[in-house]
Length: 234
Image: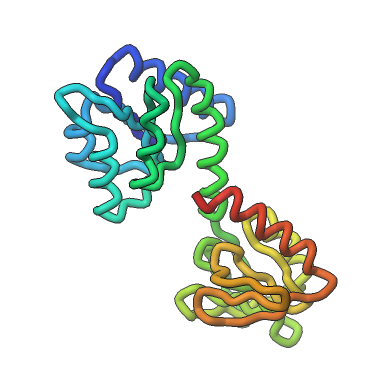
């Protein structure tokens, strides 16, 4: 994971970096941090998962213009705008800004980092043995759903591939629930990020799969789905 900071004033650049470093140290998180004095320097190699970007930079540079270039490049980078003029924040809708941070309240960086790390919750994998006894690795962010298949479990991936592994649906649901998955009926666990539509009776996944919501699990599912959207649909 990489965090970048674009701030033309060295004093502020150091202050911002210090807050980020303290947070990462306190939470025992390893992450590379890169600081830039201008957007031009950053855009030479615009690599970042999270970017703290000053709106008003020297030499006529505009933070919003830099963000527009990242957006046009389809970069998945999340952007936290930094400003001493909070009235400028409303312009950030154009680039889907992740957060606006008042420079007079840099403690707001901590909340931004909390929220950002939640969006990375599926950046991990799990291991299980397939029907042939071979150990396979399943990346959670690519896992569409888990369904029962006889006395085994079928792990269906977003690309259409699948893996059949031993296991119980209840145990799988318990281990996956902290990572954005929910058991919506006795035979299915779905990845909440792949839900395209929800109505009172069923969910439709992005690949068109439709699954009925179990009556006894409806309340639990709707609570989990609401929380997921609150946390991750920025």
